[in-house]
Image (cartoon, rainbow, N blue to C red; front, top):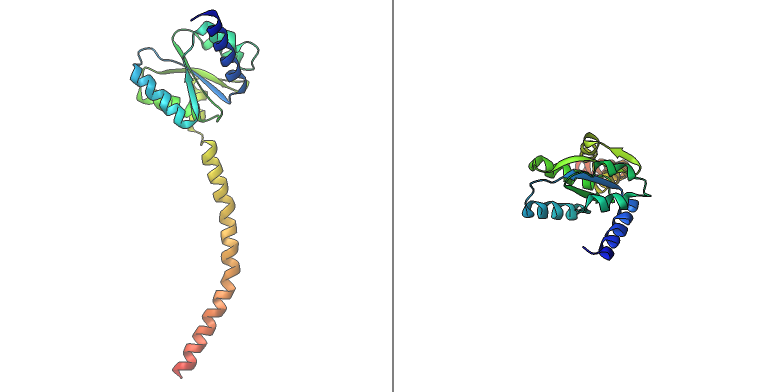
Length: 172
């Protein structure tokens, strides 16, 4: 990798670290190419990305960002997973680590907040933004449905009473 490519990578990573919702750092020793490809595709489906970069270059990219404190995690063969959704990258990384013992989560950051491995795992248990939005829409639409049912009920009761009277009148 020549000097220009390295500086471009550092600039790209710096932009990622400044504008990303969450970053997860993990060791990936022993992962095969197909396993790494699987991790990348799962992360892409969830709206995140996976990056393997030299630790020295990643530490340079961290300088001047609010997550510079994760530089201590960048030792050994590390992979960086990130996403704008604060739940997507941790969820995919934790699920993948459960199925594959070779991926070891070291920690991460959400904004300026440092995350240890347990913090990343607890983020992974939270519902995603899309799930939260669906729940909110459901909670909002349920009362509206009930209001419509209550408003329609008196009219339906009157119709049933009139129908019963009409049936009684025909029977007599």
